[in-house]
Length: 258
Image 1 (spheres, rainbow, N blue to C red):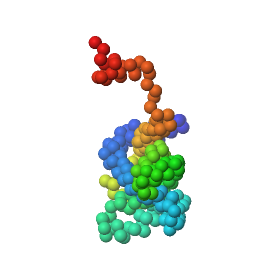
Image 2 (image 1 turned 120 degrees about the vertical axis):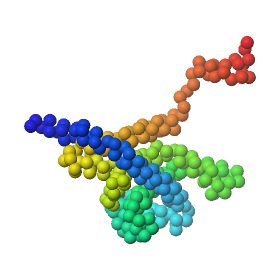
Image 3 (image 1 turned 180 degrees about the horizontal axis):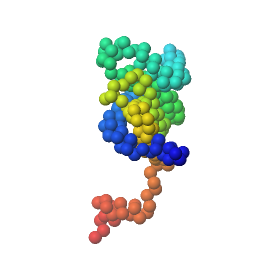
Image 4 (image 1 turned 30 degrees about the vertical axis):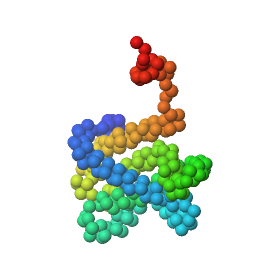
């Protein structure tokens, strides 16, 4: 058989893709989003705590935050998921039963917190020191100045990097299959893998990859758009648009013309 034909049949069997697509959309996609979004929210909260601790003047807060960041950024994601998912499985069985999702979300959140904490810390530290000094001069305490002035500006500056971490979480969610999933708990990768193992054809696994691309590529463009807006602001208003806006506003010179 022609090698090109064999390659095409192995990866582009439309019947295999059509068979796997409904389950990927109704089971795999929701489960992938549940894992990624839950881990992103919890990881962001933990990451902010790590960022604040990392810039604290108290070394008893600063050093544990740095150790945590070094450990969870240094460990492979698969190793962390297995250590937490297997090590805490007896506790999980007593609390919520055999569902591996809580431990999977916990592991992904702890990994994400290490990266998001560094993202937030760099954003907070990029805010000019004069901003903090000005807030203190206005009567804000250090905590109020950080919460109301510094942290919001820092987060705004690192939004693209935060969205990039969400993209990484969507991809890392595929590693939760190490913990063992029943049919209703499978995410995109596991469904594609199961169909590939059953049929001996890789088309379903390729379809799973396309689903990941359908999630991550638009987010990548969102990151680029946010980055451009933060760097350059809104597009400049032309003179013609400004004149039309004046005519539309009552009380302006143009709007009062008869």
